Image 1 (cartoon, rainbow, N blue to C red):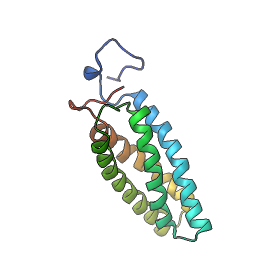
Image 2: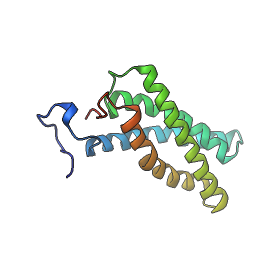
Image 3: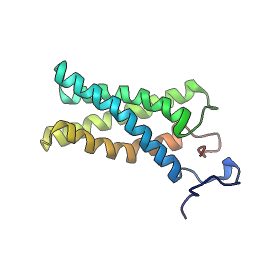
Image 4: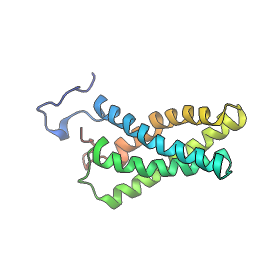
Length: 150
């Protein structure tokens, strides 16, 4: 059964976790963070001369900082949690995401020889949907009962 698409009268703690609206906000936030991420990656590779893999790790880190701010205030709307605890959990998830992105860049660009920006886009979408969203929803921005705020 799909989660409700509009606000309901149910208390927030009983509403289904995740939800299409939250996923939509997550993807919009991911696009904003990706703009920062890709901009930094291209800058560090094209202008500074770092390898695509290192530039990817730097870009993913800067994009992660952007995404944390959006996740806490707008995507998951969970500002009531302890900022430092959320930031620590987010840093762990973000480090994992940066690793997945760098590994994916190495495989898709380095081994399969797909152009590095296209490789990064492919990897980024996969990491966002398969790692970042579930980990942020269930681990970083959950309340004490495990449900996210819609």
